[in-house]
Length: 145
Length: 145
Image 1 (cartoon, rainbow over the protein chains, first blue to last red):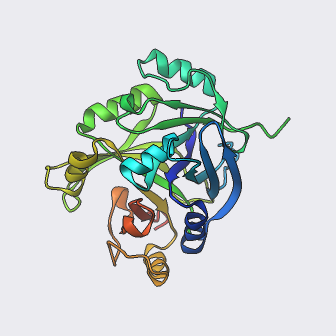
Image 2: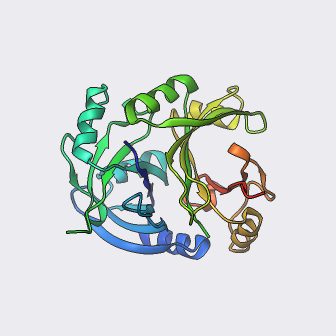
């Protein structure tokens, strides 16, 4: 079901400072910046690895700054401090994967795919049913159309 | 510097239960099991993606059960509960990467590479200098010798 580790989502207080750190310390490059009002975040995607022909989509670090303290990431920062917020896995078909996973008894945060970074279709699974890991499924957009 | 997301390390109370969950829910396969006395863990590596020719080594989920409550992972579980413990990135030369990263002012937990999963050379960076993320560098073993 999983094709790759699509990204690790990392909560931070100041997006520009964190981007500068990852760029200067580890040599990563920002490939996308977005504000996602629905998720309450300002974010940057830094490419770690290109996707090969066998795995549509690459691997990224996703840095997340909350738009306000009341957002999910804002509350996470207040409670836990900066650190890993979630893990996203590439799948070929996010709707199909959701159905398969729900049938195994895992609670879904998103019953239907919604808009994610860089045009992806995404959905979150409930961390309480995935060993404390907020888990995201990511279907990369097709580039052949 | 980073070639890939080598693995996400996830702390759990019961390794066999967590392995069974990841296998049955997400279709992953265990490719290695080890007890690492030095790190105080019993662990399993589950393959998410194969390494292509451009990136020696694949991507894995690393499930970690502490050997005792006094270990680093045992203390993590007592404080935070189950969840993401660290993120490991593939590098070509872990000793060279450590020198480069230390020169940029990041504190190292390991000043010299040590033994990691599946024969890799690994080293950890201090999470306080990496935005709260316990960060591991992983040099995969050479298979051409």
